[in-house]
Length: 315
Image (cartoon, rainbow, N blue to C red; front, side, top):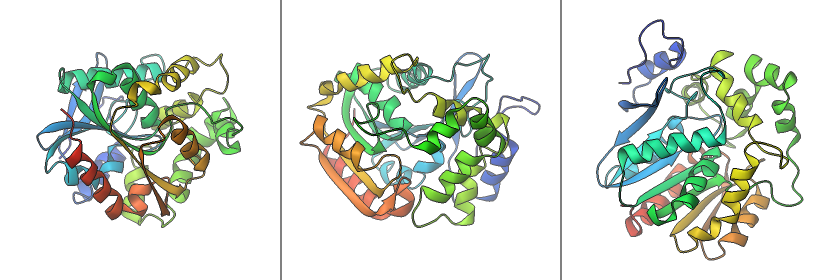
Protein backbone atom coordinates (compact mmCIF):
# COMPACT_ATOMS: atom_id res chain seq x y z
CA UNK A 1 0.00 0.00 0.00
CA UNK A 2 1.24 3.47 -0.89
CA UNK A 3 -0.22 6.57 0.67
CA UNK A 4 -0.45 9.68 -1.50
CA UNK A 5 -0.90 13.30 -0.51
CA UNK A 6 -4.02 14.68 1.10
CA UNK A 7 -7.00 15.22 -1.21
CA UNK A 8 -6.73 18.51 -3.02
CA UNK A 9 -2.94 18.66 -2.85
CA UNK A 10 -2.22 19.32 -6.52
CA UNK A 11 1.51 18.54 -6.14
CA UNK A 12 0.94 14.89 -5.24
CA UNK A 13 0.95 11.80 -7.49
CA UNK A 14 -1.94 11.52 -9.96
CA UNK A 15 -5.05 9.55 -9.14
CA UNK A 16 -4.47 7.40 -12.23
CA UNK A 17 -1.31 6.03 -10.61
CA UNK A 18 -2.92 5.46 -7.22
CA UNK A 19 -5.80 3.66 -8.93
CA UNK A 20 -3.43 1.50 -10.96
CA UNK A 21 -1.50 0.48 -7.81
CA UNK A 22 -4.72 -0.52 -6.03
CA UNK A 23 -5.80 -2.56 -9.04
CA UNK A 24 -2.42 -4.26 -9.54
CA UNK A 25 -1.06 -5.18 -6.11
CA UNK A 26 0.95 -8.08 -7.50
CA UNK A 27 2.87 -5.78 -9.86
CA UNK A 28 3.70 -3.15 -7.25
CA UNK A 29 3.40 -4.80 -3.82
CA UNK A 30 5.52 -2.24 -1.98
CA UNK A 31 4.86 0.14 0.87
CA UNK A 32 6.50 3.46 0.16
CA UNK A 33 8.07 6.09 2.38
CA UNK A 34 8.59 9.82 1.91
CA UNK A 35 11.56 12.08 2.52
CA UNK A 36 10.67 15.71 3.14
CA UNK A 37 12.83 17.92 0.92
CA UNK A 38 11.31 21.17 2.16
CA UNK A 39 8.37 22.22 0.02
CA UNK A 40 7.91 18.80 -1.57
CA UNK A 41 8.35 15.12 -0.80
CA UNK A 42 10.46 12.43 -2.42
CA UNK A 43 8.92 8.96 -2.53
CA UNK A 44 11.14 5.92 -2.10
CA UNK A 45 10.92 2.21 -1.43
CA UNK A 46 12.87 0.67 1.43
CA UNK A 47 12.85 -3.12 1.28
CA UNK A 48 14.88 -5.78 3.06
CA UNK A 49 17.82 -5.40 5.41
CA UNK A 50 21.57 -5.57 5.21
CA UNK A 51 24.07 -3.61 3.15
CA UNK A 52 22.35 -0.71 1.29
CA UNK A 53 21.93 -0.57 -2.47
CA UNK A 54 20.27 2.41 -4.17
CA UNK A 55 18.52 1.84 -7.51
CA UNK A 56 18.21 5.01 -9.60
CA UNK A 57 15.67 5.09 -12.43
CA UNK A 58 15.72 7.12 -15.63
CA UNK A 59 13.24 8.91 -17.90
CA UNK A 60 10.31 8.24 -18.38
CA UNK A 61 10.18 5.46 -15.79
CA UNK A 62 9.86 5.30 -11.99
CA UNK A 63 10.61 2.80 -9.21
CA UNK A 64 8.28 0.37 -11.00
CA UNK A 65 11.12 -0.32 -13.46
CA UNK A 66 12.99 -2.21 -10.71
CA UNK A 67 9.99 -4.14 -9.38
CA UNK A 68 11.43 -7.58 -10.24
CA UNK A 69 14.96 -6.81 -9.08
CA UNK A 70 13.83 -5.46 -5.70
CA UNK A 71 12.64 -8.79 -4.18
CA UNK A 72 15.66 -10.62 -5.63
CA UNK A 73 18.12 -8.33 -3.82
CA UNK A 74 16.09 -7.57 -0.70
CA UNK A 75 16.63 -11.18 0.39
CA UNK A 76 20.14 -10.20 1.48
CA UNK A 77 20.43 -6.41 1.06
CA UNK A 78 18.59 -3.25 2.02
CA UNK A 79 17.14 -1.96 -1.24
CA UNK A 80 16.36 1.75 -1.60
CA UNK A 81 14.51 2.87 -4.75
CA UNK A 82 13.52 6.54 -5.08
CA UNK A 83 11.14 8.17 -7.52
CA UNK A 84 12.71 11.36 -8.82
CA UNK A 85 10.78 14.54 -8.01
CA UNK A 86 7.99 14.85 -10.58
CA UNK A 87 8.04 11.10 -11.25
CA UNK A 88 6.23 8.05 -9.89
CA UNK A 89 4.77 8.69 -6.45
CA UNK A 90 6.90 11.73 -5.64
CA UNK A 91 5.47 15.25 -5.55
CA UNK A 92 4.94 17.32 -8.70
CA UNK A 93 6.22 20.83 -7.99
CA UNK A 94 5.97 23.50 -10.67
CA UNK A 95 8.96 25.10 -12.37
CA UNK A 96 8.65 27.93 -9.86
CA UNK A 97 8.83 25.50 -6.94
CA UNK A 98 11.64 23.23 -8.17
CA UNK A 99 14.53 23.43 -10.59
CA UNK A 100 14.31 20.36 -12.83
CA UNK A 101 18.06 20.08 -13.46
CA UNK A 102 20.82 17.55 -12.95
CA UNK A 103 22.12 19.61 -10.07
CA UNK A 104 18.77 19.34 -8.29
CA UNK A 105 18.64 15.59 -8.92
CA UNK A 106 22.10 15.21 -7.45
CA UNK A 107 21.13 17.21 -4.38
CA UNK A 108 18.01 15.07 -3.91
CA UNK A 109 20.01 11.85 -4.15
CA UNK A 110 22.61 13.18 -1.74
CA UNK A 111 19.92 13.99 0.82
CA UNK A 112 18.32 10.57 0.44
CA UNK A 113 21.61 8.67 0.77
CA UNK A 114 22.64 10.67 3.80
CA UNK A 115 19.18 10.14 5.31
CA UNK A 116 19.34 6.36 4.84
CA UNK A 117 23.07 5.70 5.15
CA UNK A 118 24.96 8.72 6.52
CA UNK A 119 28.12 6.65 6.99
CA UNK A 120 29.65 3.57 5.45
CA UNK A 121 29.69 2.31 1.90
CA UNK A 122 26.75 1.89 -0.45
CA UNK A 123 26.13 0.23 -3.81
CA UNK A 124 24.29 1.56 -6.83
CA UNK A 125 22.16 0.21 -9.67
CA UNK A 126 21.64 2.84 -12.37
CA UNK A 127 19.69 3.03 -15.64
CA UNK A 128 19.21 5.70 -18.31
CA UNK A 129 19.26 9.22 -16.73
CA UNK A 130 19.70 7.47 -13.39
CA UNK A 131 23.18 6.58 -14.58
CA UNK A 132 24.16 10.21 -15.01
CA UNK A 133 22.72 11.09 -11.63
CA UNK A 134 24.10 8.11 -9.76
CA UNK A 135 27.51 8.15 -11.45
CA UNK A 136 27.90 11.87 -10.77
CA UNK A 137 27.25 11.22 -7.08
CA UNK A 138 29.63 8.24 -7.11
CA UNK A 139 32.47 10.21 -8.71
CA UNK A 140 32.11 12.90 -6.05
CA UNK A 141 31.90 10.34 -3.24
CA UNK A 142 34.09 7.53 -4.55
CA UNK A 143 35.29 6.49 -1.09
CA UNK A 144 31.68 5.62 -0.19
CA UNK A 145 30.98 3.42 -3.21
CA UNK A 146 31.32 -0.32 -2.75
CA UNK A 147 30.05 -1.49 -6.16
CA UNK A 148 27.96 -0.36 -9.14
CA UNK A 149 25.63 -2.02 -11.65
CA UNK A 150 25.23 -0.12 -14.94
CA UNK A 151 22.16 -0.79 -17.13
CA UNK A 152 22.06 0.96 -20.55
CA UNK A 153 23.15 4.38 -19.41
CA UNK A 154 25.92 6.97 -19.57
CA UNK A 155 28.28 8.76 -17.22
CA UNK A 156 29.42 11.20 -19.92
CA UNK A 157 28.02 13.25 -22.78
CA UNK A 158 27.38 12.02 -26.28
CA UNK A 159 30.25 9.86 -27.57
CA UNK A 160 32.41 11.60 -30.15
CA UNK A 161 30.78 11.56 -33.56
CA UNK A 162 27.38 10.47 -32.26
CA UNK A 163 24.66 13.07 -32.93
CA UNK A 164 21.67 13.55 -30.70
CA UNK A 165 18.85 11.41 -32.18
CA UNK A 166 16.34 13.49 -34.12
CA UNK A 167 13.52 12.26 -31.90
CA UNK A 168 15.18 13.83 -28.86
CA UNK A 169 15.92 17.01 -30.79
CA UNK A 170 12.22 17.38 -31.56
CA UNK A 171 11.18 16.59 -27.98
CA UNK A 172 13.57 19.20 -26.58
CA UNK A 173 12.10 22.17 -28.43
CA UNK A 174 10.14 24.67 -26.38
CA UNK A 175 6.96 24.69 -28.45
CA UNK A 176 6.85 21.51 -30.56
CA UNK A 177 8.56 19.49 -27.83
CA UNK A 178 6.14 20.73 -25.20
CA UNK A 179 3.23 19.74 -27.42
CA UNK A 180 4.72 16.33 -28.22
CA UNK A 181 5.91 15.40 -24.71
CA UNK A 182 3.41 17.11 -22.41
CA UNK A 183 0.40 17.46 -24.68
CA UNK A 184 0.33 14.31 -26.81
CA UNK A 185 2.36 12.17 -24.36
CA UNK A 186 4.58 11.13 -27.26
CA UNK A 187 7.70 10.48 -25.19
CA UNK A 188 6.05 8.12 -22.69
CA UNK A 189 3.97 6.37 -25.33
CA UNK A 190 7.00 5.98 -27.56
CA UNK A 191 9.03 4.51 -24.70
CA UNK A 192 6.27 2.04 -23.84
CA UNK A 193 6.15 0.98 -27.48
CA UNK A 194 9.82 0.85 -28.48
CA UNK A 195 11.97 0.44 -25.34
CA UNK A 196 11.01 -3.21 -24.90
CA UNK A 197 11.68 -5.32 -27.98
CA UNK A 198 9.45 -8.12 -26.68
CA UNK A 199 6.55 -5.78 -25.93
CA UNK A 200 4.79 -4.95 -22.68
CA UNK A 201 1.53 -6.54 -21.65
CA UNK A 202 -1.36 -4.17 -21.01
CA UNK A 203 -1.03 -4.02 -17.21
CA UNK A 204 2.71 -3.45 -17.27
CA UNK A 205 2.35 -0.85 -20.00
CA UNK A 206 -0.25 0.94 -17.88
CA UNK A 207 2.16 0.76 -14.95
CA UNK A 208 4.77 2.69 -16.89
CA UNK A 209 2.25 5.22 -18.20
CA UNK A 210 -0.02 5.82 -15.20
CA UNK A 211 2.26 8.32 -13.39
CA UNK A 212 2.23 10.57 -16.46
CA UNK A 213 -1.43 10.91 -17.36
CA UNK A 214 -1.73 14.68 -17.84
CA UNK A 215 0.08 17.82 -19.00
CA UNK A 216 0.97 18.69 -15.41
CA UNK A 217 2.25 15.23 -14.60
CA UNK A 218 4.61 15.20 -17.60
CA UNK A 219 6.62 18.26 -16.61
CA UNK A 220 9.53 16.23 -15.25
CA UNK A 221 9.59 14.08 -18.39
CA UNK A 222 9.93 17.18 -20.57
CA UNK A 223 12.56 18.79 -18.35
CA UNK A 224 14.67 15.61 -18.33
CA UNK A 225 14.80 15.69 -22.13
CA UNK A 226 15.64 19.39 -22.13
CA UNK A 227 18.38 18.81 -19.56
CA UNK A 228 20.50 16.82 -22.04
CA UNK A 229 23.41 19.19 -22.72
CA UNK A 230 24.42 19.56 -26.36
CA UNK A 231 26.83 22.47 -25.93
CA UNK A 232 29.06 23.94 -23.19
CA UNK A 233 26.56 26.74 -22.54
CA UNK A 234 23.98 24.29 -21.19
CA UNK A 235 23.63 24.53 -17.36
CA UNK A 236 24.23 20.78 -16.88
CA UNK A 237 27.23 20.55 -19.20
CA UNK A 238 29.79 21.32 -16.50
CA UNK A 239 28.46 18.61 -14.19
CA UNK A 240 28.47 15.99 -16.93
CA UNK A 241 31.95 16.95 -18.08
CA UNK A 242 33.15 16.82 -14.48
CA UNK A 243 31.66 13.36 -14.10
CA UNK A 244 33.30 12.13 -17.29
CA UNK A 245 36.70 13.46 -16.27
CA UNK A 246 36.27 11.99 -12.79
CA UNK A 247 35.35 8.45 -13.83
CA UNK A 248 38.90 7.37 -13.01
CA UNK A 249 37.93 7.84 -9.35
CA UNK A 250 35.95 4.62 -9.78
CA UNK A 251 38.67 2.57 -11.47
CA UNK A 252 39.06 0.27 -8.47
CA UNK A 253 35.33 0.04 -7.72
CA UNK A 254 33.78 -3.35 -8.59
CA UNK A 255 31.34 -2.83 -11.42
CA UNK A 256 29.22 -4.81 -13.84
CA UNK A 257 27.48 -3.77 -17.05
CA UNK A 258 24.28 -5.45 -18.23
CA UNK A 259 23.47 -4.09 -21.66
CA UNK A 260 20.44 -4.54 -23.88
CA UNK A 261 21.84 -4.62 -27.41
CA UNK A 262 18.71 -3.22 -29.12
CA UNK A 263 18.67 0.27 -27.59
CA UNK A 264 18.15 3.11 -30.08
CA UNK A 265 19.61 5.68 -27.65
CA UNK A 266 22.20 3.92 -25.48
CA UNK A 267 23.60 1.80 -28.28
CA UNK A 268 26.99 0.22 -28.99
CA UNK A 269 28.61 3.67 -29.20
CA UNK A 270 27.87 4.26 -25.52
CA UNK A 271 29.05 0.78 -24.59
CA UNK A 272 32.31 1.37 -26.47
CA UNK A 273 32.76 4.65 -24.59
CA UNK A 274 32.32 2.87 -21.26
CA UNK A 275 34.96 0.33 -22.30
CA UNK A 276 37.44 3.14 -22.90
CA UNK A 277 37.01 4.26 -19.29
CA UNK A 278 36.66 0.85 -17.66
CA UNK A 279 38.34 -1.73 -19.93
CA UNK A 280 38.50 -4.37 -17.19
CA UNK A 281 34.87 -4.20 -16.03
CA UNK A 282 32.50 -7.16 -16.38
CA UNK A 283 30.48 -6.54 -19.56
CA UNK A 284 27.38 -8.61 -20.35
CA UNK A 285 25.49 -7.89 -23.58
CA UNK A 286 21.99 -9.33 -23.98
CA UNK A 287 21.09 -9.79 -27.63
CA UNK A 288 17.41 -10.32 -26.82
CA UNK A 289 16.91 -7.07 -24.91
CA UNK A 290 16.33 -3.39 -25.59
CA UNK A 291 16.42 -0.26 -23.43
CA UNK A 292 13.97 -1.75 -20.92
CA UNK A 293 16.24 -4.74 -20.50
CA UNK A 294 14.71 -5.78 -17.18
CA UNK A 295 11.46 -6.30 -19.10
CA UNK A 296 13.02 -8.21 -22.00
CA UNK A 297 15.47 -10.52 -20.21
CA UNK A 298 14.72 -10.31 -16.47
CA UNK A 299 15.82 -13.78 -15.37
CA UNK A 300 19.42 -13.86 -16.67
CA UNK A 301 20.06 -10.20 -15.83
CA UNK A 302 18.74 -10.49 -12.28
CA UNK A 303 20.79 -13.65 -11.78
CA UNK A 304 23.92 -11.78 -12.92
CA UNK A 305 23.21 -8.88 -10.56
CA UNK A 306 22.50 -11.17 -7.63
CA UNK A 307 25.75 -13.01 -8.18
CA UNK A 308 27.64 -9.72 -8.47
CA UNK A 309 26.29 -8.33 -5.20
CA UNK A 310 26.91 -11.53 -3.33
CA UNK A 311 30.57 -11.00 -4.20
CA UNK A 312 30.53 -7.21 -3.70
CA UNK A 313 27.84 -6.13 -1.21
CA UNK A 314 27.69 -2.48 -0.23
CA UNK A 315 28.12 -1.19 3.28
